Structures are given as structure tokens and as C-alpha cells.
Image 1 (cartoon, rainbow, N blue to C red):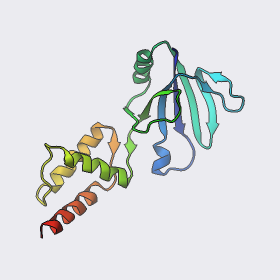
Image 2: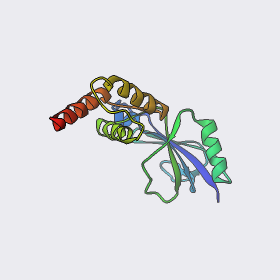
Image 3: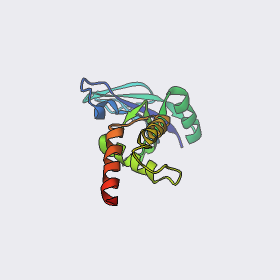
Length: 163
């Protein structure tokens, strides 16, 4: 089977978080298609639609070769948790630092606090725990939104439950 690397990146004028996070690379079993005529493109610019540009980055004989090429072509990549509904997509990666929404940040924090090695959240440990969570997120190439406020709310909720 042949694999193709296809990059999509938001290049439009909207600078909100959701738009800026739209930079992905996919390993697909079908080549990219040129906007307009739908012709297959295996290398180069494919066009732009609604502020999203598509680029093709070659064809590879194995999935491992395509993965190696993704790592060589792009810095700061991370696996994208959103599964594609397109059956031709084998894997999706996000490129660059990915900013989580407040809701996703809260889920990330909840997961971190559920770890058995996680410290107990108290007023004394609040800043240390926030620093550890932000550091872990940076290692995952993520930027969190409202970390301290979320932890302060969690601390207030925990305090009211023990009263």
C-alpha cells in the first residue's frame, strides 16, 4: 500500500484559538486532490479553501517510512486525539503548540489530578501542582487555558465538601 503525507494549515485572517490550532499533518492512503479540478497531487501546494491551505509532501511505500518522513519534515508534532471519519486517513498529527480550550484544559487537569502520584490539592500545594501540570502540558506540546483558576475552583469545591 502507498501512503501520502498531506498537511493542512489555517492561513486566513481569523486569529482565534480554534483557527490557529488548525495545522495538521495526515498520513493517508489516497493522495491529496488539487482544489478546483480534483487532480491527485503528491508534492506541493494543492490550493486553499475557506482560509485552509493544503500541501502534499510525497508518497511512501510503508507506513513506517511515512511516519519517519513526518518526523523529518515537521518540528513539534503530536498525535491528534481527534479520529478522522475519513477511511483513507491512517494517522493524524497536530503541528506546533496546541492551545486547549477552558473545557479541554479542565479535562487535562482532571486527568492529571487522577494520577496516583498526584499530590493532594491544598492551598499550600496549589501553585506547585499548577506548575507541574503546566510543565507536563508543555512536554505534550500543549498550552493550557485558565489553569490556576480551574485549580482554585477545584480547591474551593473540595473545601466546601469537607465542611
